[in-house]
Structures are given as C-alpha cells and as structure tokens.
Image 1 (cartoon, rainbow, N blue to C red):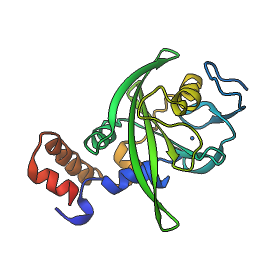
Image 2 (cartoon, one colour):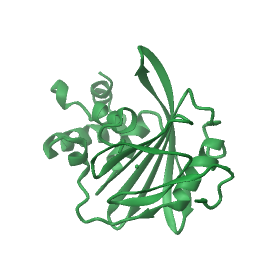
Image 3 (cartoon, helix red, strand yellow):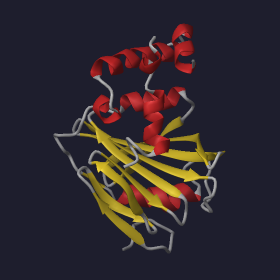
Length: 219
C-alpha cells in the first residue's frame, strides 16, 4: 500500500492529540466542583464546561477545540454522519470500553485510553476520554484530554475526579443539535472517499486478525 494511503492513523490522531481536525468545543447539575462554568455553543452542540475554558481553534465549524489552561485539559469536539470508523480504529489501538451512560435521555459510549504528544522535545503522556453519541443519523464526539501536568485525579475508570467532576457535568449539560450539513467522516479528516474506503477495508481485516493487514497498520 502507498505510504500516504495507510490507514488514517495519523489523520485520526490529529483529531485527538494535535487539535487540528477534531480539536475544535452557572452551575452544572451533579457536579461536586465548586468552580464556575463556561458556556459554549457551536453548529452542532451546546453546553457548559467546568472551570474557565477558552476556544483555541474554531476554523472548522464541524470540529472545535477548547482548552482549560488551569487544569491542563483539552476538549476536542466534532460531529460527522458516522464516527464508527474512529471508534474501531482507537479500539484496535488499545482504547478500552465502551462504558455506557445516559444523560438527559441521550446515550453516550465512553472509551478510555492513553496517548503521547511531544512538547518541548519531550514526550508527554495524555489520558484520553472519548465520548460518542449518535442521534438522528449523526455522530457527536468529545475528546477530553488530560496531560501529565494536570492536578486533576485521572484514573482508568469513570469513578475518578476527571470524569465525575469535569466530564460527567459536561455531558449532563449538553444539548445536541441536528444539522443536515454535517460532513462525512472522510471529509472531516480531509481525505477522499476512495482512500477512506480502502483504509476502512484494511481496518476490517485488522479486526479479523489478518496478519498482513496488521503489519500494514503498524508499519
């Protein structure tokens, strides 16, 4: 396979880590935090973050990035017509889940994992919570990313402070907005449909345990 047509590993990680494609999003119910909140609203979602959170990238209206500089949390929010490829991709890369939660009659699938990001010539460990909701043939994805400078207690389950004091209140506050203009995932990632379909087929083979496909994914 042509090098630049490998599975969208790099493009997808951009959504989570580099905040390019998918790093784009007054009292919250059920929050034990005494901090204030920051409301946000975009083309596909609105709600409240715990703490003071700023927009850091909204050049793509379907993918918006927010950052809490005090707690070292990045929130990457995006929407597309079907995010199942991302879920499958991160699952084969070691993300665990899903855990199922319902807030305001909306079901969310929550995945946990780790990533690495180079900052000032050193690798920083990222603890990642990926929250996915599907409604009216549209997927909504939130990544909450805690780097290793955070003072928030982060664990590998949904009982840690990171989830109960920051992510759960966020999900509780959210209203999803259906938008018929939501892009296909390949458009959101900036690749053509033929390349995306080729890589989706490769991912299916990886999930089946095909060693050739696994070698292509890792190589």
